[in-house]
Image 1: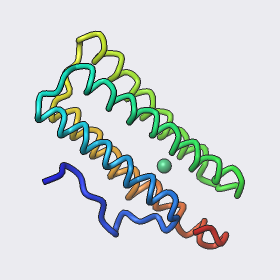
Image 2: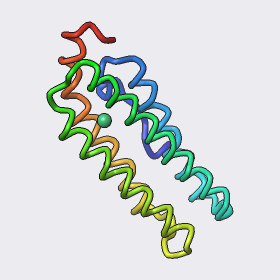
Image 3: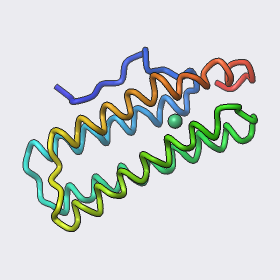
Image 4: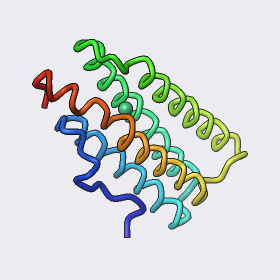
Length: 135
Ligand SMILES: [Fe+2]
């Protein structure tokens, strides 16, 4: 069973962002699988970097839309994104220096952060974008 499964309750009602979230969940599951199978350091490193890159792309896309529609929660939302990007970058740095192993603790952090962010922070823009006819 996958570590993390997208459920309809995660929908933010913006199709593009639901698709992004599914892709992020897939990358987290891919990393988890690689960890369980004891894949090579370089293989895990590649997945970690893919996760970091896609996360940055996705956050930038969300923020672009928030800026375009003058979303009132932008500053607070962006601060959460920035903190996560920094945390993931720090994990990658430590992983590459051999100071961090990808453990269940790391995996749970990634899953719980994304899940919590979607359910509590992203969901706040659902009604706003719907009112602006963004789907
Ligand atoms: Fe977000």
